[in-house]
Length: 171
Picture (tube, rainbow, N blue to C red):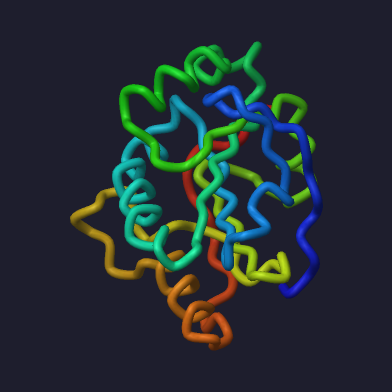
C-alpha cells in the first residue's frame, strides 16, 4: 500500500477516446475498476458504481472501468459488447478495453469487480471489493465509499485492503 500506481496509456474507451493514467491528472482521486460484461456480480453492482461516480464527481473523484477479459474466450466482453453495455446502463464514467491485459497484470487484478483507489499523487491507497455484498439490499459495509471518504477528509484509509469477490478475469 502506498506504492506508486503503474502507468498505462493508450487504452481505447467505448466513447472512441484514448485514455492513460495522465488523462485524469486534474482529478483528486482515481478509482480503477476492473469489470466485465457477463459476470453476475458486476451486473449486480452496476447501479451502485454509477451512483458512486454521481455522488463523488463534484469532489474531483473519477471512476475508470477497465475490461481486461480475453474477448476471444469471453465473447460478452468484446469492444462492441462494451459499447452496448454503456448504452444500456448509461455509464457516467469511461469504460476502456485492456485488450492484452497489461494493466490488469500490472495492478494485480484477479477478478471482476476489483477496485484500486489512487490518491492525488497516484499512490495506491485501497484495493479490493466495492462493498460486502452482491445483493444491494444486504450491503452493510461500503468499503470503496469509506476509503474515498477517508481520503477526501485527508485521513488515512482505515481499511486499505479487502478481498474482492466476483468472476475471475478471463486471461
